[in-house]
Length: 347
Image (cartoon, rainbow, N blue to C red; front, top):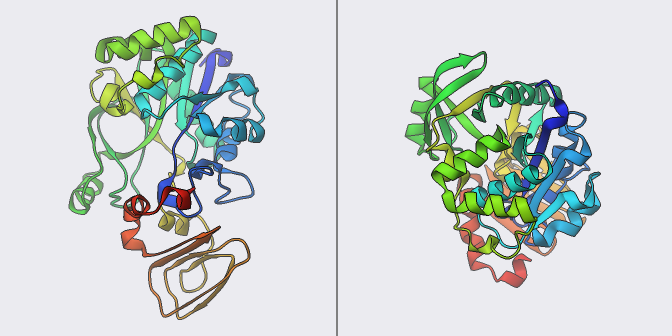
């Protein structure tokens, strides 16, 4: 990309991170947690974008409740942290992001990415974003795909077609999170990528895509970009993901092969590949006494002493007034568990 001053980044940081209960709460979601270092996930994401994206060209769209906390955490202008009045999934979030960037620079190219992914090394990530921005200059809607390291059932997949430029491919199909058998087939096939949820496009290209496939949102983009006021009608947006709304329908979609290490840390078990383990494969943090334990995630805070005996492949997580105990094979049911917990307790 010739003019780097035209490159903006918008970080999506509105999620609740329910799968990380009890550490993640309504008032302290996953993206604000220091899961892997002394910095929160969103701080790590911002640092990963520097110096490619200058602070004044880096925006965060989040839940209104988190605006003050994020402004305190991040070295970007306070006005660059924008709170959605209500959560409406990723398509309205992208529409708002496009409007905000268009209002600043109608000729901008924008990177859109989640706040809570782990990516290494930053240099390769930035190089990939620059390459994707080059493809976006021709009008493509670019999404980054990660070579699957195993048959994951917690990720969406992208079926890739012919290569159109080094590292960039036509998209044949987006696939929802598969069952275990289908995931194995995808990995064996070799022509599927994990859907990273990271996008790069020119702001005018994504606006045209909304005009074709989501005209009601397109009208809102124009209005929000013109007035800067989205408070009055954002809540009227339908809940729909950007994949359903645009990416699965548009014809000018490319997937860029991501050469960096990527993990969306979508579960407690994901920490096992990112944090040190003991000789028995246990990931341990806090005051933990483990006797005859193997393959477990054992985490505690507040100095509470935790002891386990004779357990295998178990998550035991203590944070504040909450304790989770579950087989790692059942951790996808944490959201179901939360529905049974009183809202006061979850907060």
